Length: 206
Image (tube, rainbow, N blue to C red; front, side):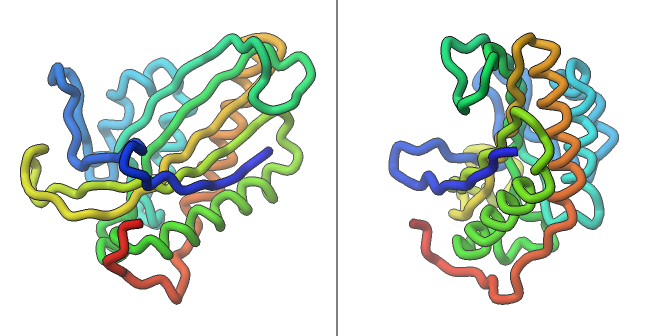
């Protein structure tokens, strides 16, 4: 597996709001750590059961994370995003991660998120050494934590991680199989991460 991390905090960079709500009101944020039974209700999980296993692991009681948003998509590529022979098709997902309520005080710590992103990328690459044609990208973004359940309520600035996982192949089934292997690896590795001892909240938002 090819894994890396980056930071996107510029004024035009995408940011997460929590809770979030679709403009048309069809879907919105669900706290899957508090309501894990609702993972099976997600459209993405019903179409891609492997995503459900990743969400269950990331929202588990011993994980430092809880998830905020996810999506899955497939592509037919003119040229592969990573240099692979016969990688004409790819399957991807993203999962937005925030620190769990137990680590609420670190949600505004950029150093903590940088260290967790670094550790996650290195662990995935080390443990995924034998996974062919897979990739992970972890992006540190801003997150605006609203003080109550209303999306238009006052918010506090903080950070989140967006985890992208990809599989590439000569056919759509091969790309899907490799993507599922990447999800299984992430489900095994990321819930076991611990926060660095030196991590501390700060007011710096980039």
